[in-house]
Amino acid sequence: MLILGIETATQQVGVAVGGHEGVLASFHAARNRRHAETLVPGIEFICTQARIDLSEISVVAVDVGPGLFTGLRVGVATGKTLAHALRVPMIGVSSLDLLAFPVRFTHKLIVAVIDARRGEVFYAFYRQVPGGVQRVTEYQVGTPDDLASELLASGEDCLLVGDGALRYSEHFEDVARLEVTEQGLAHPSASSLVQLAHARALREQFVHSWELAPLYLRKPDAEINWERAR
Amino acid sequence: MITARTASVDDTKALAARLAELARPGDIIVLAGEMGSGKTAFAQGFAQGLGVKDTVTSPTFTLVRDYMGRIPMHHIDVYRLDHLQEVTDLGLAELLDDGAVTLIEWGDVVLPVLPADFAEVRLQYGDGDDEDERHVAIRFVGPSWAGRNRAVWEALDRWAGPRDGPRDGKA
Image 1 (cartoon, rainbow over the protein chains, first blue to last red):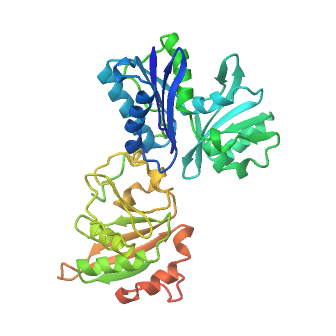
Image 2: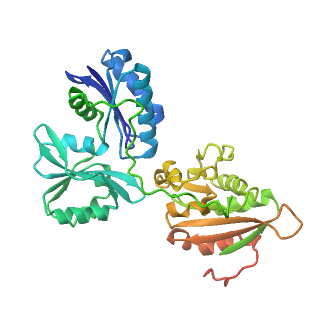
Image 3: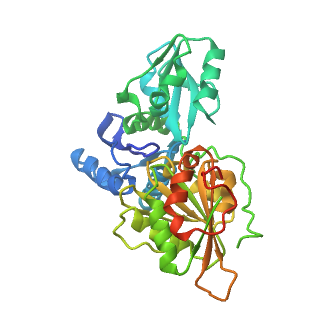
């Protein structure tokens, strides 16, 4: 079984391919947010390096967010197209789950935080469990101060991970017993995506390409009042 | 509120170019006014003032167009959208947060999803028979433009229309 992982939820573009033997090749680029220009050449590159033909891919895994709209659209649309063309199933994994996974070797409360722009962050809390992490809250969107209040209320040792935690680190300075991880773990990793998707693939937790949807954490919608204007 | 009067499309562009000289990264300009009032012309002049070399065309069908100038410029048109969520779906938070100036045509109808910190430029047809004349009303909401009130007033002096406030800039 070979899984292609596509990760575009933040300013980073990440792709990885792997399966039972682990991750065979990966590529990440975090500059310029040129998702559309970088993604497909990235897939081509890792497949060449791992000596894999696209037709050998049996699952397409995609980071479904929450994250930046521009990146998610490119990643989800590309993943769906490939899965449809290759006639293979898909697995969607949340960006916040992907952030928490690499820091699973801690007993602290893990808080994955993604910069949602305009002064907001996406976040969720996790705890270490054998072999990984388990999410203990809903995926949420709020201001860094909303999150700081929740951290204070938890009264636990916390480990914050993600570009949102780094950008707004000064908002969490008053929270005692808190640590923010470094730049190297700021973005979800496509390698983590392949690893998490592999575990799900073994349990056959697939979705069809037409069922997979990005996780936008939308706010309530309303119609535009065009009556007086248009 | 600053009011001005322009005599032609080119004059509207010239006013916009002058205003663009005062623009800063992160600025939002809401363009209001009925069809044909000159919103896109204003954006074209504004782009010129930012030093954009490319031709600025209406974003009505593409929804968003990006330009490189002294400051990058996003040009958005929400005319074809029916839900506020669609405006957010354009990646609005990211567009407003990447150090560019953002001009939003018909932006006055989507204020609920915009930060309360922008300049609104309302273009209206003149009262007289001259169909090229426009009234331009500029209103500042929020802190970022408030500090530039006087500078804008002075920059647009050439086009000065009837003014409802004292000249010391406390509009």
